[in-house]
Length: 119
Figure (cartoon, rainbow, N blue to C red):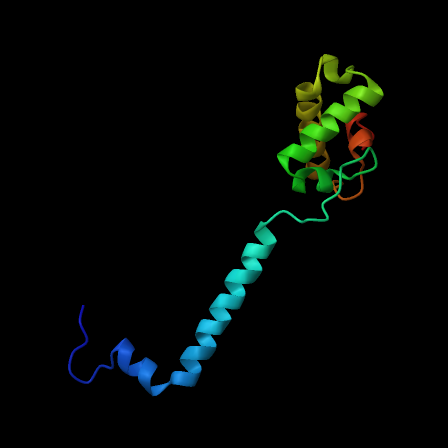
């Protein structure tokens, strides 16, 4: 669809409103930068611990979740849901934290409490 007679083109609008165009481009660049920064993993993202909440579990990276699962097996044994290793622990934590989220307690309950079904 081309601009007919009497309709301004994008080029005409940009030429007439240089300051507004520059401001709009700057705003788009700032918004893209903020979204990119939010999408990148935080440099201060610490390791998960037994006292971490289910909300922290769900926002952790897969590497952090796997590291915690290995730590859990080392410290607590592999008795979670009859599982034998870190993969079973990850699955059990996911299930327990999903249940906590369903109950609206994901912000308040620790990973270990969720595993023990202390809702």
